[in-house]
Image (tube, rainbow, N blue to C red):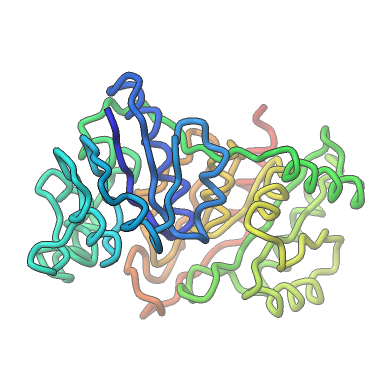
Length: 340
């Protein structure tokens, strides 16, 4: 059996969607699975042993012309993804596709797309469904594909060069394998302003962790992407204790290799969360405008919900910004650090 998965982005969503691969392999013995994605997301799939071939959306129509699949699974509502799903010769489509050049979705995928931007219920009802949902993303996807859900995990494999990058960073900064390493990733790119923890609160958290985990000789690493360069500079200037700067210009897989050094990761609901989950890290994750229910931590994490402010509103800027308690985050790290 030949299966095509279409999932373009965001990168974190691509990573968590890899959790479906073991379920497909279990149900459809000896199946071949191809995957269409964006160039930015391809690296997180390239070392995956359960994927036969990766295609980029830019040339997928040409590359897949004439190919036939028994099942096309389109888990992306972008027009290009829907167009491709409708163009491929297949026995069955599950997910998003084009109907009279308008984005639509199959009835069996309504559990997911009915909460999204192309919901046939309209945005207001879709948002209500989203806020009421208690199922994880993985649980939903397994349900719509009629797979047996057993908390199958996302997959992210680092090759030798990528592992070597992390090893060199660890040696340079005297990070020991046996030591307690806490990663701090409190930014969230540019889209979700209120997913972030303030610079002042982040610095306070760093100092608190250094103080309270002193007996454990903990090392704290500050993470960020290009958009967090200025922000992280301010955090370092505010923190009074030691912080190891991971830098903000690492490639995607270099970033993943540095996350792999962590014993515990403190992060917003962002790409770092999905990388850490796939690398089986202990995680403290805080939520604001996005759904906490959708996130599966596989019994290795603690979710921090704001005491005040918006929750699961999916606005780029919350009407009432969420307020987080730094003590809750520090206590969650300490709790996870005591669990072997």
